[in-house]
Image (cartoon, rainbow over all chains, first blue to last red; front, side, top):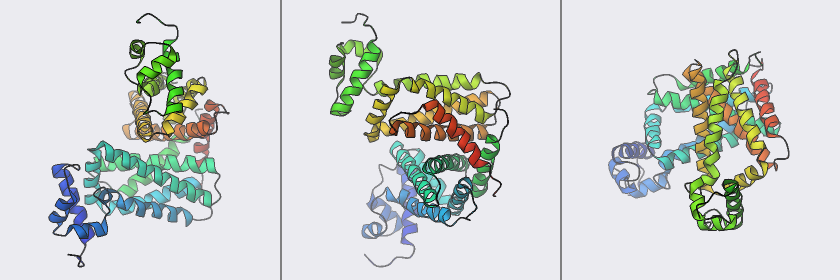
Length: 190
Length: 190
């Protein structure tokens, strides 16, 4: 108990996702997750506050990445390009964790409360993007518009990718979606 | 009891919104709404299935309007233009009911469960727009992308309008937002 365990966080994450899929999220206890991972409950609580945080803990890491990406973008980059680049970077991180990410998504899709929490996470990402754009001097209304539509583009891309079994590369899908929206808006028909 | 009452639906709506604001949504009963409106509970239940439907009943009407607008759009209109036009039309209807719409929004903003239901309504609108685009032959992925981003543009516009006391004209704000996103994407910087 309490000693350092190699890759405890990763083992707990895999164990939790297995159990959420097998028994359902509501029926899974922290004790069962720890047991499946061959770790103690105390070790679980050193890494996660509760069983929900196993699913949403990495959201904050990605949110900070989005903020940093927008802040570090080239001076001449447009708000749209900054948001697209930030979300492509987030896509790369998710793509590198495909087995975890797709299992996680299946658990969330099966549970209304978790779906709502996931929507809340996306709202928080949009707010972070908006704040980062405004810190670069982008006017509030435009920052909000580009951040929210950027998140919508990302969500469409991500859901299509996860539903399709994550066989394609997520960053490429996100990139294509931002390009497609650009093309879709550029029409002389109105 | 049970007789026809002039504008019963509208009276019940106003009474409900008053009580939701005064006492809170959870503390308001159907009996209280009916009493405030000077109508019977039986009359209430001829118009609404429950107190939540007072807030969300008109969502279906708007959803059908969106579908009809996309279906009836000019043959040469782009998916982006069709979605923009449909949501501008919805904006006109909402703009015509400003006092009701802004009070409703204040009630929803104050209540997490209602906010989630509102998000669900927006998802349903996006699905309706996507289906209507696909019925015109738009490829699924593009239909999904344009529908979801369109709803994001609408939501940003609507929330800005409602928060600002609805002093501007919502259809004009929606129109400007779609134009602004178009401008934002058209940059040669990448």
